[in-house]
Length: 231
Image (cartoon, rainbow, N blue to C red; front, side):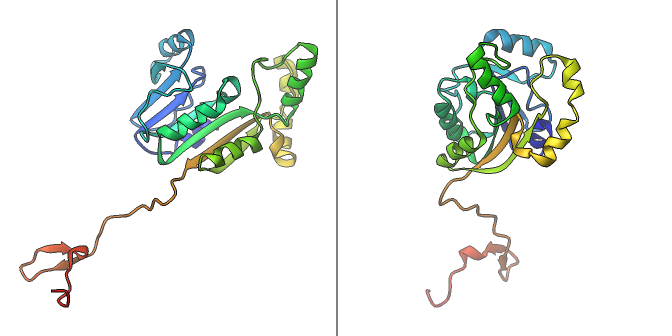
């Protein structure tokens, strides 16, 4: 799903924050792609294991080392639910995005079979997903983005298979993927949300194509025309 969405997003600078095991920008065609992380071990293994791996930076996710309005696309694959300051991370992403820039967020859905299994794990101590995760619902995520003037363009859900730990049982329930997409599409274990940064009061102005011909054959823009009455 990440490859399908990022392939048609154009610009110059794309950034993936966290989860170097997932190369979310592999299908994107921007000339400059960056992969950032907090752990030097994961970042080094990823860079050495992939011949075409993006450039790797190490930093605190709450303080992005990029200039304001300098990035066209930011991807956050399962980052916000595992950081101590998700609001601050989103604020930093909004800061570095250019107007009309895109953000893609992947998260675990609380209202799903996996979310129910994780809640059970909190009581029994046997977790299915990392216990450090604080899952954020898709509705709540939309509210956060709206407060930052981010317009949600698309939200997709997936992974309807029950939270089994063995490949044998996972394969037996693969039929639930098609059923889930049709009958309970918003109950997938994972959601992927795409939003656009909107800047109030900004209007995109195109070039002036109309020209006025002078007697000598030279062209001047219509905007430079001075009426005889004003003369």
